[in-house]
Amino acid sequence: MDILAVVAVLLILFFIASWSSARSYFAKGRLAGMEEATGEIIRGIRAHYESAGRSPDAVSKALEAITTFVHGPEPQKDILRYHARLWTFGDRKSVV
Image 1 (cartoon, rainbow, N blue to C red):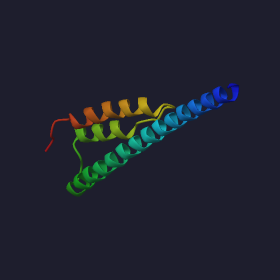
Image 2 (tube, rainbow, N blue to C red):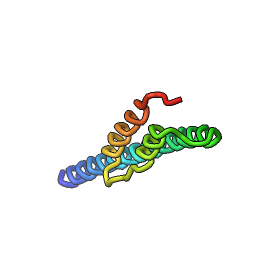
Image 3 (cartoon, helix red, strand yellow):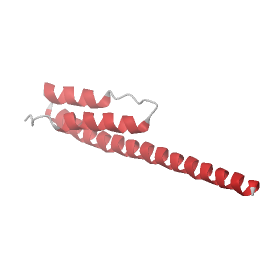
């Protein structure tokens, strides 16, 4: 009976560790996908304004704010911070 209890506890610990690892992997992948999409948007904006000459100050500030993101130890908090920066980046009024 003691061996069965030990095996059950070890199995539960294995599932908890697996779940934690999967959550971490998913969060890091989600953050990487958001960064890749943002990079594509920034490259498109820069290409558009570089062909026109000089970009407006509001666009330059928005691009600088979104590219100065620093990662922390917790990917879940980074996702929330990145969402906040993307909201302010997307909230800029159109400058033509």
